Length: 242
Image (cartoon, helix red, strand yellow):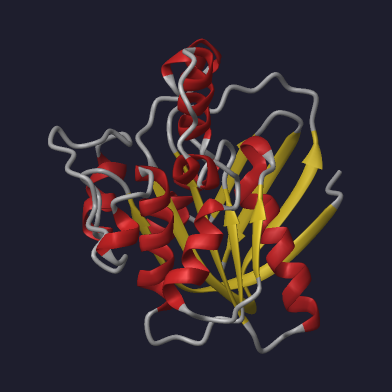
């Protein structure tokens, strides 16, 4: 039995990953059973000032570049950065340095927190926009959509930018990883509307997602597909598109 549902409309979207910059490239990715191209150059990060860019992790570059691309010349009222693991790669490197008796880099330390991308975005964009950093495991994207819908319920004329981003686990944690993907950032500008309905219910399944939910969700954006169900750790997520 469905526990609840939210409705929203997608005004604009984008996605970045090594070798996949344009929507046409993502179309090919989808047609090729969601396999990354043989040549996977990193996406451009030209909207990030070089002095800041050279100190950023590859994951933060993806998230911040995606947010800056979608925010160009647009009025955005609220931003949600969602990530399952966040800056775990950088955090693991810091811990390894400490274990080896080395001093932790102050810059690396300051950018090893979960809200790194959101902080860097506000610095670079110079926009006084409320920003939220969210982590809900495998369910980070749908939970970000629920957070955005709660905001829109009180601000029906506003627009919310969601950026869901992640990268594979560091080598030390690879034994716990069940997914095979490259670092990515998926951005959605959403507003009040009924283009999409997302409902959910509890399940008791032991699920192993092949890809992060944000990447699976691209099939609704790239095709005429109307329905999508994703079974997560203890939730069944159901999307319907008009």
